[in-house]
Length: 294
Length: 113
Image (cartoon, rainbow over all chains, first blue to last red; front, side):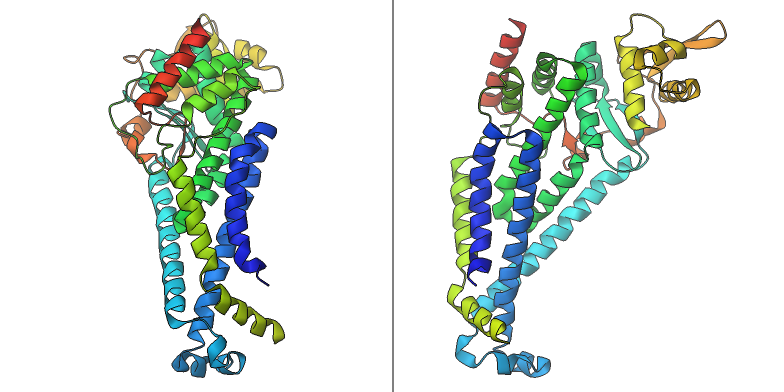
């Protein structure tokens, strides 16, 4: 019964711990898949817990319970959720929905200019640009400065990396976890781990493609160190803590590699998850008892 | 088509001199039709990523890699100032802080040294 409440907590904590240790034992591909699943399950269980609390509280309101008819028989007064808890839950759910929708809109807006892309496009830019544009037909955008300053085998590595993103549908993992993280910010560290795992996955695919881990490592390091005019939007960036881990992982495949998640973010996540899942545990439990008896 | 285009461009990048469709086919393996390779080469040329010269009956293609030679095309105009619009895409690298840059320089020294 309490599983529904404990599940989000367990999934989030478990996910962070897994995100920490999984890269030691499994491939980036497995890591990305497992963590994506954990994020989706955590988001789903938090939403359902919030929904239950909101429903339990709304049954206390006479106007609502009269209108719905079924509520009053089900919840005799003292066992429902407190109105404030219901209001908080409903508000959290509302915010989550708004933020998720906003993220989807942002993705659509950012992808719109690239709708016509088919294959490779080189854009005039002094910034070291290279990214995959998912979709049909989809393609890869590369900045002219990056293209001109790299050696041929490094260019191949960049191209192989971006092609791996397209071929392996990495945008599905990334956008799924980013929607969940937009809705429930305590999932942001986990979403970062998934992003990192897809980058590592594409690096490994590129290393196979060009036949050299060193070449891919060198390409990543050189591109990252190229001067850039415009700052990259910080919201989705790794706060600069993924690139050297990727290079290190390519050069020293036997070392344990993990993305550095700032301690503060981890603690905040744990606290949010705990608070979120223990909201009105008693009331929710009572609600479930009633729900189960019906 | 996108992945094939990348493979063909990669062949051109690695080639020492001008490359004919037959050369590209040989470099990629033979499972691709000649016309497919030609179509891709023409597309790359139309995008301004290659230059071509008549060589016998076929064209020979060279990849354009110098900044001044990369001809403008319709996409490039549309995508001007693109880097800050791509925050939700999977980028090759992200921004760096000082500590990260130092770590990368050390790793790069290790690769080159």
